[in-house]
Length: 408
Image (cartoon, rainbow, N blue to C red; front, side):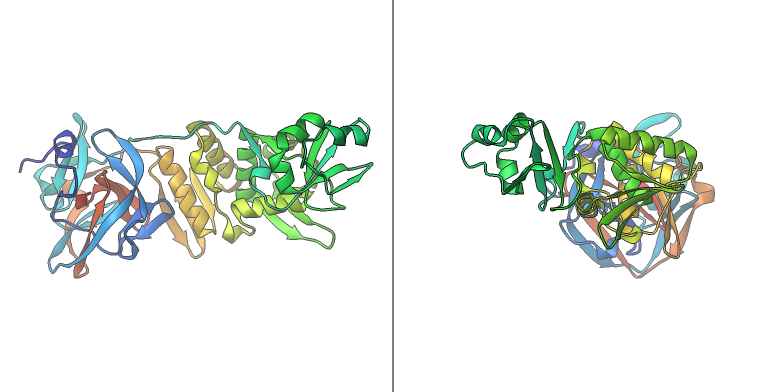
């Protein structure tokens, strides 16, 4: 059978074109922008990580159509340590070989026509721009800004723009501004004051509110993987647990650069700051089972995404490239983060614990050893995706790039 190359196939992608009369079983999972989802639970409009096999570029694209069809015959199975697929015989499987780098396609039912196949193992993705600085007043809604100056109070007030009115003033904390006033006149206040700080309310300690982008990415990583928020009688405490000497030195240096004074014990770093607790909870969640990555992560550049993954592994990873979490949302986020860094992840579950495997290898299979025919469910699902024809799918946490049935 003559099978098209990726370049030849690109010519048929257009308004709505069928690629193959194939399909997936309903228990097959696909990597969406919110982590893995079973195909039989997908709805039109959900965003998938999709690959253009012609360019090797991955973008997020919406599902535009899902069809459930009856099927009363055998599925082609591909079973390896890193692949678990059950495909309709007409489903197209993209592949390369050791002697052929250009992506080609083979019907799942015809895989025995040759012996050795390589899955797609390399791709590119468009990353964002570097996060240079974080101003947490762009994220929070409830806080007070304290502006202090060596000048006489009347002199400072006389230089403020019309309408820029503090709601309170005293000799120690200076002038206090509400969020709306501060955001409207932020440049003027910062230019006139000797020091500008933030706090959650009166009688709370003043804290810095602007941070270097790389340092903030590290702080988020440390909290997500080792952090917790605890309510006390007098405050709300943000804590990061850590006992490893090397990582404790890293955290000491990080908090010094951030300008955050912390309490240090033998096994943790903590800061009593309701304003930081509100920030962290809004971005990442509060408990280990609620943890997630903040939305801004997906706008970072490659280096900062890589930095974030490294910090996550310093907390809850091991030397074998396995990351552990009890948060389903965080597990999905880490799978997506790996994909965006060019890593084809796998996962397993033991009760509530997710185990995410990030080892790299050139995935492939021997059709004489790793393929067979299996009876499956009496239905199949055909997906139509916008623009790009290949998605990351699999069963039991093992994913590979496989073609969809149609492109719109």
